[in-house]
Image 1 (spheres, rainbow, N blue to C red):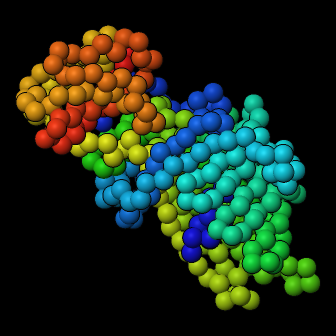
Image 2 (image 1 turned 135 degrees about the vertical axis):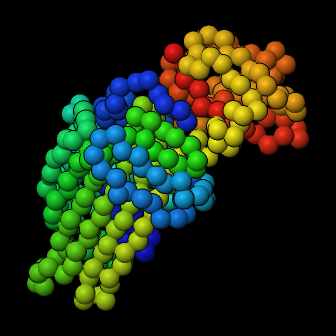
Image 3 (image 1 turned 120 degrees about the vertical axis):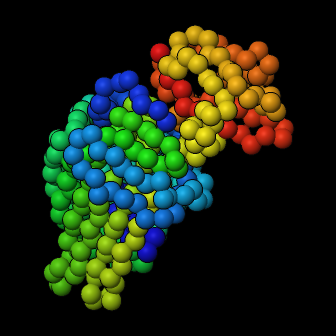
Length: 329
């Protein structure tokens, strides 16, 4: 099951920004980056389509923590997967290889669950830069796949559509200005002398916002069918960036604690029931701590931080950490 999923992946508050667009400067894979995520449990709901919709996935809960890493491929890897410029290790034991150009991101290969996919005949167009809501593009892709010592050919299409935009609900939090990419892969598997022996299909939903280079939330459904090997498997997986699960929901906290002004430019003030809280921390949307101090002053200066979205976390020795989403102007 995990192998079939992996093959397929080779593949708060309202925010006053324009609708998200996927661009090279904001969303291309950059060597040296890390992405802290959690595998999710539950059944994702990707049914909403169109503009201004709500993606309600509050039923999903955080599972195992994983860390994705982006790196420069070795010389051996670039020889195996010609044209590769960046490698993504997803934290679940899989490596995806990409060719990044000023106009797009293409899949060149993958090593996943003991299998090797090599798009050496025809790379798969994964994302065009830029991609805005309602855009769609289809590309052909082909190469070889090796698993358990058997090599087969694969060929087919990959279609990416920015099919929806709106608000994502996850872990009782609200994330605005989301654009969703739907990526569908349909490949025919063939073997010399036998012809077509099966199919590999998948649908990937990637949810981007204005604050994260990599998808805030991703779901994958994949199906592999090889009748000769009695294989007919479908697998599902969902992951979300770990910052989604920091602290508790904003609404409950706001009843006891006030954080103002929000959006903020320089000084952020605290009021209300602060008893027991001793520390205030600011995290960026990739989960990195960017500022911390004692809460005694009941204010924190964030003028030096770049404009964007952040998570303010209040903590104390005998208090459960609480978080509020803030906007730095």
